[in-house]
Every structure is written in structure tokens, then in C-alpha cells.
Length: 245
Image (cartoon, rainbow, N blue to C red; front, side, top):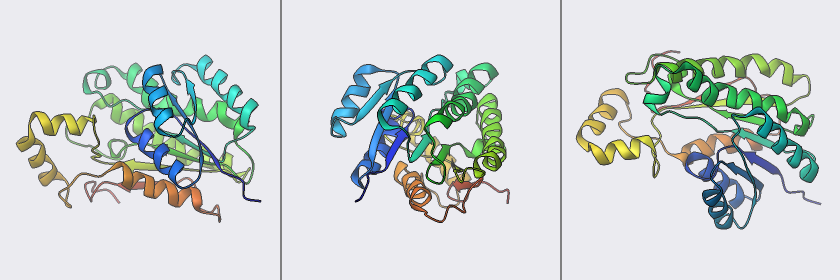
């Protein structure tokens, strides 16, 4: 008998996380979402067919531990964990390294550490949403944010060895300029379309933005892969922007 796969996506009441939740729901997954704003979370849950949600800030260890305990009690384990929580606000992430690391590194490492209780041997897969800012210098990127994402990218590679002992895979998706309603790029193009389009033309060989759907397509490939041989890898999604090999 077919058993629905269960997926937990952090920071999924809006943006990329919400799009991933919506797409996984459409292909038959049992989706669990998370956010810090109860009204947004309830609205997202309703639009996703009243899917299960857990309110809480996953940068806080105590709250993260509580949410994982509740998931374990109800579902025992999850087939897929997507670590999507991040913050790219320039003012908060440039010189404030504490903020940058809290939201863009520890928010993922803490979640994975506590989630070991709901990750099942030979079954579970982890996907982390990172950024090309952690691969090389990107013009205009916040310093702290770039450092945190660089640490995350290296962490994915290092922790993959430990998780491989349980045949649990972990991979990262490393997006470039992703646009969606309410995103940083959405605001920039509304405020200064000429400057924004010029930046894309000058820096992205394909001369266009990426989408949340592009991210989902890589996620789906990783989660539907039954061979379990892809792990510790970073999948760049940048329209050819980065120059490193």
C-alpha cells in the first residue's frame, strides 16, 4: 500500500518555502509548514488544504527542540527535511555577524541537529537552501550573509559523511538571483527597474532571474532519487553568474 511521504519545510508560510510546500502538496506529499507569524501561517495552511503547521522561531534552540518533539509524536519521522530559513536583509547581515550567522547558519545546523530524532535510516533526505554568496564574491552582497552561507556550504559537505553512515543524504541548493512576490529582487525592480535590469544584464549571462519553481525542480530530483548516491553536493542555480568551477 502506498504511504504518503512526509516533508517538513522551515520558514514556509511565504516566499520560496511556501512555493516548495505548494508544489510538494500537488505531487502527493504530506506537508508540514513552519513560520513565526501565526496569521500568515494559518493563511498558508488553509491555502494548502489545511496542512499541519508548527508556529515557532527556528533560530531559537528551545523552540526548535519543542517542534521536533511534536513532529516525532505525531509522525515518528519525516522523509524529507528542507532547511529554508534565512535572512538576506543587507543592513542586518552586513556588519552584524551575530545576526547573519544566527539566521543563515545556525538556523540550519541547529534544526538538523535536533531533527536527528525524526530522520530515519535509509529513508530520510535533507536539502538546505543556501546562496551563491557563499561560493565567491558577489557584488553588493552583505559580508556577514556571505560568510554565513559559506560556512553552511562547507557544513553540508562535512556533515554528509556522518549522515551517510545512516544512508541519509544531505545536499544544498545554491541559488543566485531568485525573484518572487515580496522578495528583495521584487522590491528592487519595482523601485528602480532600469538599475536592477542592468545589474542582471551585466552579471547574469542568461540575463534573467531565477524562480522558486527552478528551486523546486532540483528539490524534487533530489527527493525522488531512490539510489541515495547523491550527497554532500551543492547545486548551483545562477544563470551562469558565478565564475568558480
